[in-house]
Image (cartoon, rainbow, N blue to C red; front, top):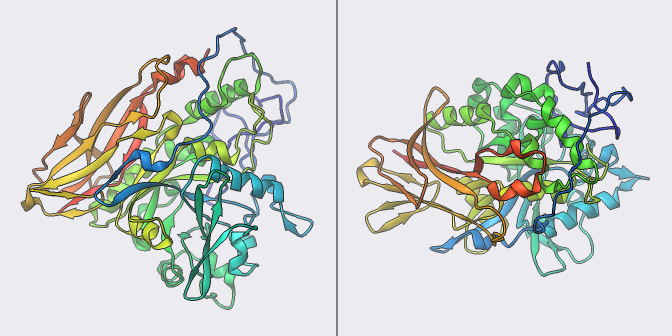
Length: 492
């Protein structure tokens, strides 16, 4: 079996680990060890990279604008969130060294904090593994530093805010990821059989009840590996519909997504070679694949009558690609991963712990793949008479709702770049685990009046022609990709 070399390569840029991951790698792709890192033991295998002298395009931004520019109306506004990320309280974070000499890995922690500021994340839901989180007081998980602002509830520390150099503030809320992923916890869950670790690792309806009693909402990570019967038994508050880990680990991508990662792993080497003209920010285009598995299970849960938002999981650890790419930054840096995609919460009023959690409870969530640009102006609403209904609302078919999707534009797109094309879609969830396209528009906005009850989500797809100049030699990667996944409207 061919091994990739040089560099002590990496990848699956898996950004995470999961005990449910199958052990057998897919044929014709590099061998991957138990942590998801490619075996680079064969020093004789190399990949021929053709270098070209390509004039550089305009600098692609490394930071993100304030989320508010995406949308603000009727007392609501978009706030940018990360759901599913690991800092220094996960054993496999920070290249497997989250603690150094008895204390947190400070350079890794500072990379995490700086990334939140540079990408203007408004709220991050930490999801730490139990092996470290269950051994420290709950408040320690936040790793507050001088200048941080405590967030208190009933006299307890339940979160914190980081003050960024430009005045931006980031709300941090604790949570955990094991088989279940409670987010926004206000305390440790009650111990199970006297053990906090057992409580965090439990995976049944009783565990869900303990996490909710501790203030959390319960998410399901790595949905592609979870049987639909178990998802139904758990009854989660939200589910992952995309996780970058699944794109890059051959043990997941092949069996669960039907995707051979071999070509992507070969292409990734190019971004570590000077002189190619490739922009490392475009690494996402190399491996990004939708998960029909996750989307299908989401559809099944929704057609059961459940009201569950979907979210994209960064699953960032800084633990797989320490070698710098051509911009001098490690391939899996927190900043780079947070820059690629996130979740917009449609929050009412000011951003607080309560308003963020309420947005999720009410299914006011949409996934934005900002690697392709910030989608300014996107909205998905329903009109019933003179009343505008928000994303995630339940609406009666008898009200004759008109579903409306507004077409977003790429924020501050440089006019020297080719123009992208976008397509708007409205899709209805089917009990068989599929999505039926009921309306589509290649230009202008999109309106659709349902004639049957159902669960309808909106989607913006983009052919990112504007990224082509950043991918010399890899133009074959250009294709239509999702730009925005919206949570549904529930027409009853």
